[in-house]
Every structure is written in C-alpha cells, then in structure tokens.
Image 1: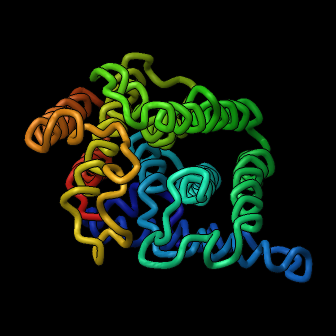
Image 2: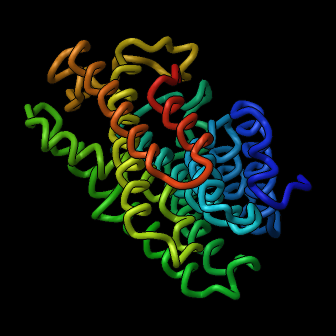
Length: 307
C-alpha cells in the first residue's frame, strides 16, 4: 500500500477503509513471519496456519482506528497492529486445546492441534506470543521512540497476563457449572476478552504523549464497554449463530457448563445488556475531538457481527 497517513485512507467509506487496512495488516504479518524456512519448518507451518485462516483482524483495525483519531502516521501503527493480532491468534490456539475448550473447528477449519498435533499447537501459540513482543521491541519505526515502545510492550503484557487474558481464562474455567453474579461474570469477561480489545484501542495513545488525559479516559471507557459487549455477543452467537457462518459448532458453552450472560440471565436480558453497552460506548466518542468515524463503525460491527 502507498498510503502513508490514516487520514488519506479515511477518505474512503468505512467498509472500503476496513478492507484496505485488513490487506495492509495481512501484508505486514506476512513480512514479519518470514524467516529461515528450514528451521523448525513444521512449527512455522503451524504458525502460518493459525494466523492466515480468514480472521477478521478486528483488533488491528481498532489499532488503526484509534491511530486515525490521534492523527498518527499509519506506518507507526503496523507493529502494534501485528503484535495484538499475534497475541489474539496465540490465545485461540490455546483456547481450542483439549485441556481448555476442546474445540474441533476454528473458522471452518480443523483447529491447530488437529491439523498438526497438540504439542505443535502449544509451541505455535508460544512462538506467536514471543513474536508479538519481538515486533514491538525491534520495529524500525519505533526504535527511535523507546518510551512509547516500552509503554506498548507493558500494556500488551498486562492485557495477556494474569491481570488480563490468561487470568480471565482461568476464571472462566473455575466458573464452569457455577452461578456467578453479574459483577463477577463481567469482571471475567473484561479480563478474558475485553482487556486485549481495550489494549488494541489504547496502544496508539503511547505515540501521543501530550494527549489530553480527559480525552484518553473517554477513549478508555469506549474500549472497556465494547470489550465487554464483544464477549456478550460471543455468548449469544454460541446459541443463536449458524455453524456454517461462525465456522464452529454452536452450543459449546452449554456443553461445557460455561458461565455465560444468556445462560445465566436469558437471551432477552443478554441482548438488552449488549445494546446498552453499545450505546454507552458510542456516547463516549461524542466528546472526542477528531475523526472517530472508524472507531464508531468498528464499535457497531463488534456488537452486531454474525460470526
């Protein structure tokens, strides 16, 4: 792509803008996953199988959308966009393992531990996680800005560690067969799913150190609410979704006795909570000074998606 600035991409409607940015991050991921192919070839094949399997790239799109609002150069955002997607991909590999959710399909294809083997799937997830941090630590466009790079590395580490995704997954497993209250289940959702979505939105702020704290706080509230809404939508899709559309079997939450919003409170209550969170999130964007078109569009997509 020849675009060097997000405002140039922003001249296009959100659908076209999204397509262009997805193509951009796919190219960036391919470039960063290239390596000596005779070294650990099977592992590299598994990593590529996981990353290039038709993912929607929602988290990288959130990175670019926040960067657009901040009026940043798009070249500065490729590294965090790739890093957050690799963390997401690694998490899916581990979530699908027999010791976790024991899923057979991911986006319509056999999960990594079935397409390869369980050990290779674990190693692929480990390697993708390591690669994410390597990208942030060594990217040419960030090497002259060690402060922002370190801030993004720390934020991503928090989002995928015990105070984020890994901790949330642990709570999810512990809550199986239980009846947690709304505060407990939404805390688990925030850690398991929301923390990485929030990180995707907030990482570009590291590149704008003079950002008004009040504006940053509003962006964080938007990110927090859409992260929570995203997981509730996932819960609804596990009941109402069409397997050929979502790319995996439905009913997994019930089969594993998972704590889910619709399972605990019913479909109507879950839908109402989802709509309420979406409205609250979009209202957070109203006072922001700048181009929030892509952020608002993505916020709607996250909560209305059918897969």
